Length: 156
Image (cartoon, rainbow, N blue to C red; front, top):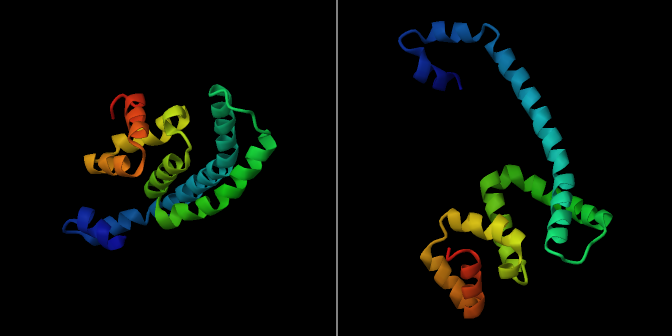
């Protein structure tokens, strides 16, 4: 880190720039990281409750049969543990993309499931679903399914 700071801001006097950084910069940095990590930890701890709420709302909005909130909560907490550990190893973007792809693949009728359309298919399409990917979908899934899906997504 010191080398990077020297390269970018040290100019002809890197020692002077380093000296300025010793004036409470490093302790400020570490305290700020500690505070941010605390906020991050609290946010991560709230994810299962948030996900449970989203599932309950989605089922109600789509008129699907209700599930016990305790059952949904248990399933969410159980599924969250391995996913949480993958955040650091896989990365947030890749993990989010993987969850979206899996949601599309396991959904029995994505063309009829608004949450999957809005939360997985559209973001994947906006991310740059290539024409070859669309063609592959048509090879794997029934043509009428892909057509209904495209129509439901406004031709995406």
